[in-house]
Length: 289
Length: 223
Image (cartoon, rainbow over the protein chains, first blue to last red):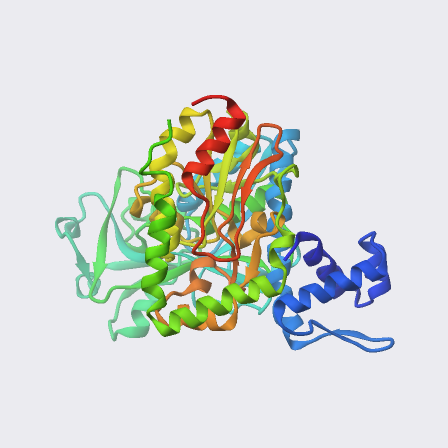
């Protein structure tokens, strides 16, 4: 298929009128129609119903539209980033981080974007999955990292990035530090800080075991929980990927192992600016160990 | 001088692999259907041609860097080769042949970029498994391939064949479009125009490294 054909089809999907779509694409209607017909031949069936005053997508057309739209966006984004690099375009990169998800894993991708576009402004926002998805849908956020088990609208794209494992975070000199691996039973006599915005590892543990834990609920972010651990208030189950200050230590948590998948999400069908598009591509292309 | 083990050797290796595969009836049917479908639809007429500009791009590399075509062109001509994916044994042969030809391509003053629609670390796997030193870039969602006019949707029979042997293309691409490039090779001269190309609807046919080397040497005058 050709770039122009796909562009014509996507324009037609938006305006559902051959004459207006051909005008918008700056091409004669016969040439426009032939181009769509050739695309239909390639896909092996009609993409549109053509009735006198009504143009509608067929089932095949509806199925192909998001894929063709994504491919067209990718073609435009690859070129736009090349252009933006030449012209030192200013742009912003707005990344949402779901509960307990750090920026360390995507920091390399952010660095690459800033290397290519030095004038980019970076925004990180930590919030609940619902608030972040709402921000994305209202165009306040380019992409969001979210854990599994989030209710996402159908129009949200999601790509798995990595698996997050629970680790026990302790202050240095804590008695559990001597253990290489900490189990659920080991923490039953400890005060466990349960941060509302720190990931739901404790909830996941309680959902699959009958353990009775001494929980200290905290309406706080991960960095505040880490401060509280350092002050000796208790220990916490957090992501094993969190970088820690030198006065804290982490130990793997086993029996049971608590994991969650982290996904990169964007709004389907919404073109991203060159900075955000390249960030998403970088994240999708690589593997996160 | 172009060495004999590079000249023509890829063609015979590809033919041998193709002959072996054709003994598997299910593979042969899917293969013949895919090639016939591309020939029937006149697919190849969409591919960009010699004298046309190659679409400018910035894409992520296997190692997580952004690579700009313009930056690579600043150093000399660029050989851009499209691959179907890490799972494709014909691509693996092509990659190995290009890895072998790389010193001569570089000696002639050119660079080599491999583009694949695969994501999720597969470009890095493809690079490591085939001991490749050149850049392997992820053409995420086939955007550059589309601009080059070499993307098609895998026919049903071929999709079913891949699924039956456990190759999860949607997972590898990060989408369920089943779009894939024909394994074309372009040589882009420093002004961004295409100086030479190889495009074939039959994915078992690839550009011969010896022809690539000769074309690059013709462009730069370096051996």
